[in-house]
Image (cartoon, rainbow, N blue to C red):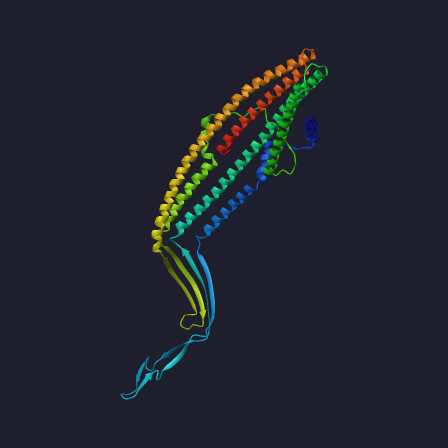
Length: 446
């Protein structure tokens, strides 16, 4: 057991030593640098940007549907058999040469081959939709809404990435501060163990006290290992989110000046900027356009048709035939089907309106909760800073007493450990306040 504990101590010392030696070569990042890297390298965000471009291309596709539709066609056919047309004698008429002599036209049955074995035709047709222009316009408006939806989804992902970076960033800082506290506690436990070992040599204590102190040292070493693993995990998640290739890196500390906390009303007035709420409103707008399109589907398809046809091999039809006309198509069954579609989309509209109200209520609650957390964290900051001030004064007093030979080194280390804990408490409270402000900013779309 003793050998195991000594091994842990050696490992901890080696770990701390490695960190101190390599700290000079490790790059330090600010929270803004990490956020910019995450937004630049995130694949989901890139996918959303390509989706935005895809939806914009869809708008251009829909706009083309307003223009005339031009169709080109052509065929060639070889006929093995041709039709016959027989004109009976006298079909055209009779020429009376005399009362007894009449000439039939034709004077006998005549049979003619119709057409040629090789036939072809080629033509161009132009169709200009008229009655569907309104529906095409509605489709363009729907495509524009799809672009807005993709942009809002992209904004939402960007806010989530930014918030995730902040949580990891502050998690690293808090864990590092807790590591400093654990190191101070370990130094205190080691000093007390040294005092006990000296007392054992002089016969002033028993091994039970020493065993308890060694167990305390092992606990602190275990706590330091847990904190170190936690920091490693935070940094690994940060590296994955930002695309940083370095195996290790440091983060800048926070400013001593905390951001101001505006009034609750100012935050509540910015609820409409929330991406989730805007997405629900876009869903309602899409449903309204869907209802509009369903009503427009009841109209018949009316359009102008014009074209030009060239053919050969059919003597009955003209060789060149330009034409113009009007096209009408009306599926009566659609009148009944669209009635049900309209009913479905009306229900979808009611769902969208309920979703908007629910999202507004949830946002108001979440903002109120985050605001309350920010105020509570600020109160904790004020109390923790007072406690830290008193601990620092106590530490100064203990150092002065040690210099005067009026106390022991363990008294100073004990006060130093308490001071480190007070510093960690202040740091945690300050970061909790900043995170609460960050939560609010995410909720209002900042």
